[in-house]
Image (cartoon, rainbow, N blue to C red; front, side, top):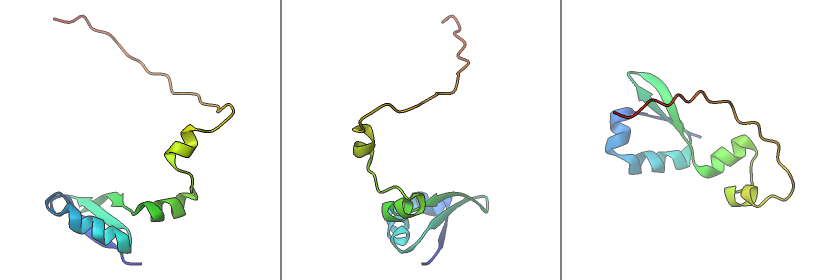
Length: 80
């Protein structure tokens, strides 16, 4: 597995090359010299997360799912 690094500018200029590189291994995308994102193929992502289930399968699940969304503090301001 090879690891490739792109600057943010290189990534924006040649996304196709970054996607091809992601087929061979993770692609680190840097901003000001520091890695900020990682591009992975979907197969590698599923291998790492242990999730073989698709989004469609997850949405079609039977039964109850416990979900406690975080509270939001939305403040409404009058429009001008």
